[in-house]
Length: 363
Image 1 (cartoon, helix red, strand yellow):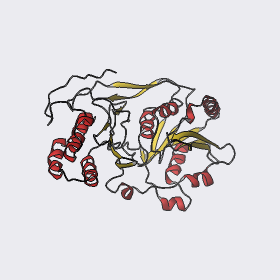
Image 2: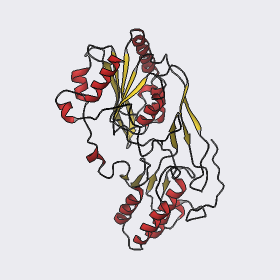
Image 3: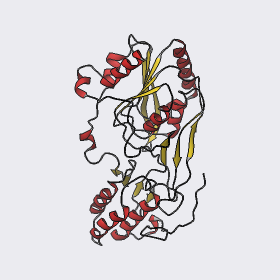
Image 4: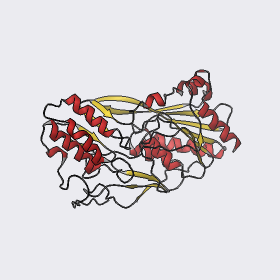
């Protein structure tokens, strides 16, 4: 991938490139660095109806030499609010501001706790498994429970729960070979498959690729991506195909992918990738809409640092499905819509999982 560093003159308010970290440290200069940093790095201007110049006009007059850090944080958070990029975050010391959980997100979409019910009422006790990773977090070793699964009681269905892509459990060669053997055995016995990505907030791209590589049984192109290549906010690269090699025999029978409003990032890329396979159906609620992966700070396409040390995180590229459709800020709608209900879960019924079991049993 080639990144052009030529400076293009455009309709943008600023014509000359200045790195955000090169501005002064007074509040007005930090404001300029913030606005220009997003102007120079945001990858969704071609797809986002936001008027970024109007955002500048609305907020610039609210900042002066006596503006406090708390006031600046509030202003920057409001400025980011309308952006469709759901990876947008202002990082101040150890605290994050922005992101997808704004505008009463949790109020509009209450999160459900279904895992204990699945383990208690749906899975056979024999043959269950759990897979964890040990990661570094704040200079400490932390164990992350990434996956669990087993057979659905009284059904020829295998259930695989992916809780997070933080970690590298599927990159363990011993487990991967054992899991591929398990898939091959289930194929031969006519088992269908459920991949549960609900409440999965994403994580590592390498773990996403390791999971997706298990499904198709062949190398396949699942989507496309674009990045910004210049100072001009609308100048983008061509479409780059996103391809994942196969790492096993693939799953031959029907696959139900379960998602909800808390399926984000790598979980959405997994949904996007697998939905292009002919034997896959997506069941549940629309995903969160954070499909643009993040990376380190890079010119014109990525996160950046302000003069006072605050960091701004943005998506590094725009991601599209196999039909070149973008889902950022909107989410991926399921093939079969089922609204979750904590009341139903408390009464012993996982409505989304029930629909998947019913679908696999009748199609």
